[in-house]
Amino acid sequence: MRAVEIVLGAGWAAFWIYWLLAAVGVKRGRTAWGPEMRFRLVIVAVVIALTRVHAFRHHAVNRSTLGYGVGLALFAVGLGFAIWARLHIGRNWGHPMSRKDDPELVTSGPYKLVRHPIYSGILVAGIGTAVALSWLWLVAVALAGVYFIYSATVEERFMTERFPDAYPAYRSTSKMLVPFLL
Image 1 (spheres, rainbow, N blue to C red):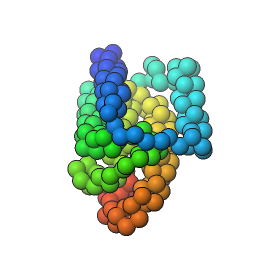
Image 2 (cartoon, one colour):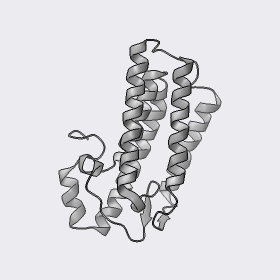
Image 3 (cartoon, rainbow, N blue to C red):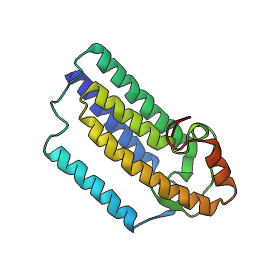
């Protein structure tokens, strides 16, 4: 169990360090500071509160090798998918609900499978963490899921405004987060 915790902790830390470094050199943009920012602050406050009361520690329910293996596989596939999407979108990437000054519509690579593959990958990695460590992690995954669906909805509104012909056509050929389903 401890080794799995270390692997997952190191994996998440490496992912977020990469994510911060990859943000250097992206196109300029603006952040929505209205209701979107309040929504972010509520999610952050809930996660901080849950972390402060140690909601995610020492509640392991998957003490089998299979549970650890499946969890680690989902974690790796999820982060791999998010990183592939981040590399594929290149300089067009921005933090959730940001508006780029000169956006491009990317519909190839992982974006051919789903419109928001970064969100999808992070959610799958979170589910993998829950499977490997504790089902209580699904609380964090659910909060992230609500945030990502809200963010995706705001982003899609912006993309429809910027690409009134191309984005609705793209939207009709792909799912938001889960290929063939959602």
